[in-house]
Image 1: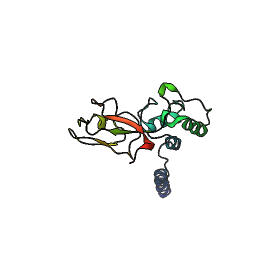
Image 2 (image 1 turned 120 degrees about the vertical axis):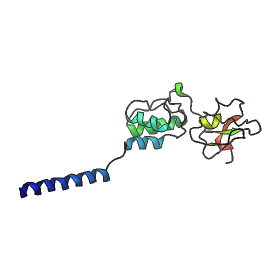
Image 3 (image 1 turned 180 degrees about the vertical axis):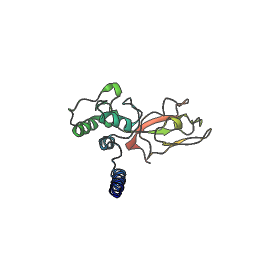
Image 4 (image 1 turned 180 degrees about the horizontal axis):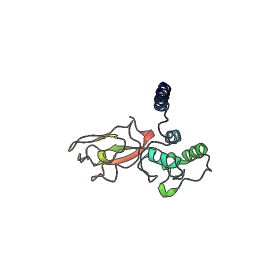
Length: 167
């Protein structure tokens, strides 16, 4: 009886230690997804047909997407993804858009009616403003995704090359 009790306690202790080790040394998520996500430009533009860079990275890691679906990443992004994933370099898929120089949204504050539609559309919260008040773009946060353009009812948003703007 004492031997069985000692054996049960030893098993319980071993189980507890294994549980602690699994919590301490657990790998959270797929590390490949993190590596892919680090290569992507983080514009969150959804041109790749995924709602942001992280979901696209997950699809790439799972083999569910091609490496040429990110226009903001351009050809250099395709090459970096091909190298990381051990795939052949393929041309950028123009169905998702064309590579271009980075842009930045600028709001003509005199024309802005404060409808907040651009704020709701911005995936990175780069637009600051309140209802019925003028809005402005936080230049350091804007990724140039152009998602704020379609909902603007007064066309007060313009995309300009990011290099020509002083933050």
